[in-house]
Length: 198
Length: 291
Image (cartoon, rainbow over all chains, first blue to last red; front, side):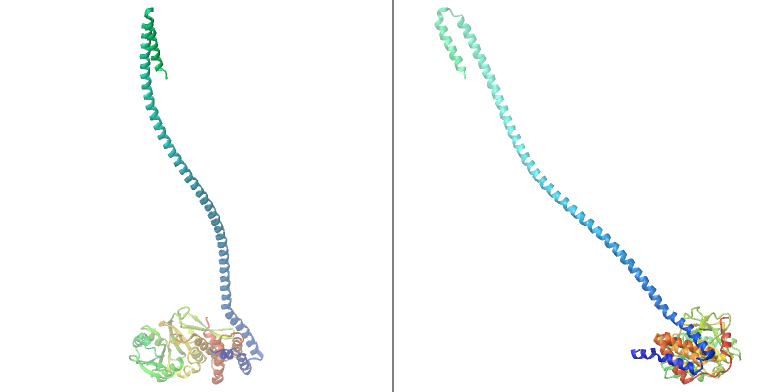
């Protein structure tokens, strides 16, 4: 239906037409007027109720929607606050983890340095042990040769000493005339002992 | 002889679906019969089996179509039907047995329908409320006086139908013509009575529901207003009806209401008020009230 047609049917003429007919039929005088007004009031109440009913239902529906939206907004707000708290907690956790990561990095570097140092030290220890081993082996060999030399020398000195004792005993028993012999033998003995001096 | 009058708007599929039950029920009632299919608008391509076609090339609605069918009918009794009703085998026989020779306009079966709030369209009563007659549904059982015979299925004497002038074509194309006819019959002391043992199954205003809602609402309001302007005789009730219509003019801005009321006033200016004779409005309402 066009706008013009709507205006036409919703204009005041319709009421005027009804009233004109009512007047023509004598419905606006005497008992007729009472019945007319009474019915008009009662029917108007029904019409308004009928017309209002969908509007009231709509208002109720909108109120329910608003209540729903308010609940939704409150829920969103609460959720947002929770998310913000969670976000802050995440930020703190990330910072903490970052700090831990940095500390672990430093510790790792220190451990790497220590390890290198220990490896160097270990190598030095290994070298030292090898060196000592060699020294020990050399010392042992030296000791063995020294002991052998000493033993030899001791045997030699004992031999020398025995020869000296024997010579001295022999010289001591020489008669006085054989002093030159004694002298010569003592001199040879002195040479012998001299040769033993370092 | 019973003449079944079935107006249709070219609904061959509905006729094919429902007419066999009408034939069966007519055959089972031990009376000669005929079926007149009134083709309202000339859309029907095939004449249903064992039916006579009454063609109305220009569609004018339910009332004029039934009137055309009645004019062509040969029976002394009329079985007025819609094209979307299924009758039980015993329906026509029970209606025929219940229709007295005098004093009754029509007998109506129990009309089982999804449209009725209580599932039964037949027990229509009238309630005067805030200046206007309103239709209410009650159970059709036990047998009771109804305000009018629902147009989908009833049996009446052809002579009575014609004496009443048939359906008032001012109500065309549809709605309230059956209330108007029933009210006019009551005015003459001719009752409409339910026969609950007889059963009719109604698909539910199949023809009217094809129309746009705004058209249906406009037609309903137009004919509701026209019914009061044409029929209500008691001066106080008539003044009250006009007061109630004034309330709609004042407070209801729905387009179908305003176009309907406007059309009713215009139509009333042409067709006028019925003569004041017979039972009073109070007497009629007393007979068709809830109690």
